[in-house]
Amino acid sequence: MFDAIHLARENIRRLTPYSSARHEFDGSARVFLDANENAFGSPVGTALNRYPDPNQSVLKQKLGLLKNVSKESIFIGNGSDEAIDLLIRIFCEPGKDSVVICPPTYGMYKVAAEINGVDVREVPLVGGFDLNVAGITEAASKIVFICSPNNPTGNLMRHDEIISVARNFAGIVVVDEAYIDFSGESSIVGSIDEYRNLVALQTFSKAWGLAGARVGLAFADEAIISLLNHVKPPYNVGELSQSAVLEALSNTSAVWYSVERILEQRARLTEELNRLKCVETVFPSDANFVLVKVEGPDEIYEFLLNEAIVVRNRSTVIGCEGCLRITVGTPDENRSLIEALKKYEQQTARL
Ligand SMILES: *Cc1c(COP(=O)(O)O)cnc(C)c1O
Image (cartoon, rainbow, N blue to C red):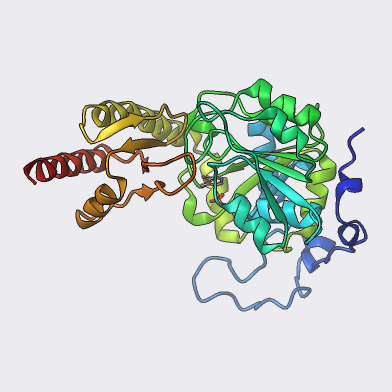
């Protein structure tokens, strides 16, 4: 049977985690003289003179209800980027172990691996940006990162193929669901009980509209979550961020409303882009961005910059040749983009 502890690095298995004042006492008391805080208060009004809850208990309570998982299956990080880094540090011995990524995909997996001195094996997506399941399961690595919906291609990976990887890959299978709320598909979180090597990553940075708060989530079997909690910095999610997320969790209707509007705009933007001559392909998207193959990506990118519009130039990424990645904006923002592209076409037609 799968054993996460056995897979972890030896030094992590032996680690005695740091125990903060608030780890050792998180009940209610009359007088707190345990954490060297400034008892006279903070200069900014709110109660920021106290350390935040290192266990993020209230937040996990609410999240558990929303996601239908136990508190012990939830890790909360300083963005999901923190979870990516911690997973690599927990399971991969520098200079010895490797991770698998499936390019074209999110850049942080490779960067986090390289920072930690961990080898990266690439098993590129095949066909219409699909997983190469056999290729992944053959690569004997500690972790595979699957992004679904994938950044920058925008498509969901097939659920049965992800499960097939989870069944056949000997290491940890990380499924990054940063964009899942735009997809209309159910999350892989429902499968973490059955597949103990599965980790689902989600974030408050995209659909939830809290990129500035830096809060990300990992859902997995308790054994993996416990490792993450032991290795994370004790106060990794600040008080302001925790309270912002709590507030968002009591106002989910605003989130789902904005997601609906983004989906409407995604359809419109796709339609309008398809009408342009400089656009070759708008790839179907399950996320809040579209990957667009254009004629002259660098010229268009520069032209848009001159119009004070920033998109993401992905044209040098293998598998994304000629492509720009464009985030779905407000109706006004999308209109500005389309106008600018029309202007570009007029100018190049005149040349
Ligand atoms: C944006 C994004 C994230 C979010 O990272 P945070 O650190 O939570 O802001 C994670 N994964 C992918 C694929 C992303 O595109």
